[in-house]
Image 1 (cartoon, rainbow, N blue to C red):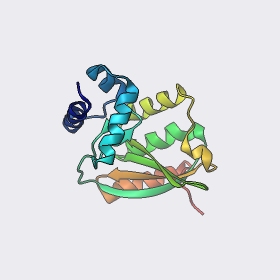
Image 2 (cartoon, helix red, strand yellow):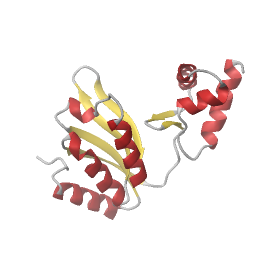
Image 3 (tube, rainbow, N blue to C red):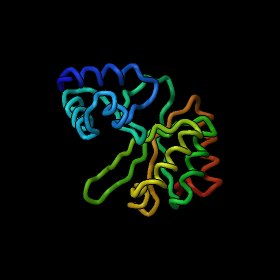
Amino acid sequence: MEGNKRRQEIVRQLKQANKAISASKLADKFSVSRQIIVGDIALLRAAGEEIIATSRGYKYPQTSSLLTSKIVVQHKKEQTREELTTIVSLGGEVVDVIVEHDLYGELVGGLYISSQKDVDNFIKNYENSNGALLLQLTNGIHMHTIRYQKESDLVAIKTELAKKGILYQN
């Protein structure tokens, strides 16, 4: 399949998908390498497509009526599962992780974690990778954008994170 047609089909599939699609799955579908798909996604983004890269693959942003806030946390890498589980168990979705970097400024990693299954998959992927968590760049201090249904959900999330010593406080 010619590149332009493949990219049009990638857009169509991502827009119809309920969840992220990995570059490997797209590569298999189109009988090309994973790197070709990564290049296709880069070209689509450069052309204005709002494709999001997550740890589980590519997706389009969902329109949402959920409320959104940023929270600041600090913890050791061993507390990552506890932090994420706390947020999702109280009705939150962890949209991203944000750290301040001396050279690059703000670094943002898309997470889109909204269930315990997502938490388990993220931790499994981390443990099976050679990658480092962004919190390791900043002595554990980082921010998350979180989505939630109602203000009381945010209060509950922050209260529980504070009890666990994870919510960053002066």
